[in-house]
Image (cartoon, rainbow, N blue to C red):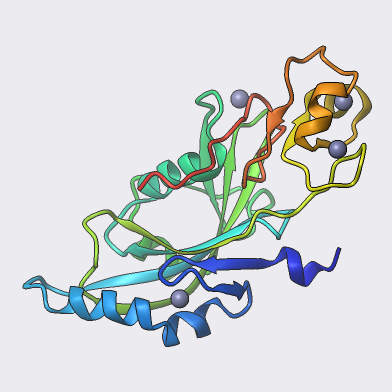
Amino acid sequence: MANTTQHKGTCSYCGEIITKRGVAKHLSNCNDRKNVLEKAGRKKEDPETLLHLRVEDAYRKEFWFDIEMRASATLKQLDSYLRAIWLECCGHMSEFMAGRGRTSRETIAMRHTVDDVFADYKQLLHIYDFGTSSETAIKFVGMREGIPAKIKPIVLLARNIMPETSCIECGNPAKWLCMECLIEEEEWGTLCGEHTDTHPHGNYGEPIRLVNSPRLGMCGYEGPAEPPY
Ligand SMILES: [Zn+2]
Ligand SMILES: [Zn+2]
Ligand SMILES: [Zn+2]
Ligand SMILES: [Zn+2]
C-alpha cells in the first residue's frame, strides 16, 4: 500500500479528493470555498483573525485533518473538538504541551486563546489519556483576516480518507476489527462483513466497526469519529 494513497483526504467544501500536502493550495483555489467566504464577507460583522491548523496523529500520519479556528477561541474549545472527532472514550484527562511535547514538559493551560499560544509556538502536542495515551500534533499552517462563515469557533477544512484495510481471512475490504486478535495476539484483526460471522474469536464481544480515528482499538474507543459540528 503506497503512502500516497493513505495520505489522501477530502476537501470539506467541494468534496474533491486532495493530498495532505496540497490542502492549502487547493483551498486557495476551491470555488465552493470562495463562494462561502464571499457570502460571509457580506455579513455586517467585524473581521477576525482566523488560524489554519494542521492536526495529525503524532505517530500515524495517515490520520490528519485541517481546521480553521478563530484566534479568540481557546485551547479548551480545541480539546473538545479533538475529543469529539477522534478521541473520547471514557472521559480521560488531557493536556496540551508546547512544541513537540513530552520532552519540553511545558504544559499550556486550556484557558489560553490560540492566537496567544501560536504567537509563541509553531506546534503543540495534545495528550489524551495518561494511561493508554493518544498523542496528537497541532501545527500552525497560516492565518488570514476574515469574517467567520460560522458562529462555531472551528471549521473543518479537509480531512483524511479512512485508510483502507483488508480482511485477514479473505483480503476483501474490511469494515470491522476483532478485539481478541488485538488484545491477545497483538494482531490488527480486520474483518469483512462475511467473516465477522465465521471468525473464531468472541472473548471481547462482537468485532467493533472500523472508524476514521487513530484511537480505534485503544482503551474503550469505538467512535463515532464524527466532527461535533
Ligand atoms: Zn474544495
Ligand atoms: Zn478510555
Ligand atoms: Zn473476509
Ligand atoms: Zn480475532
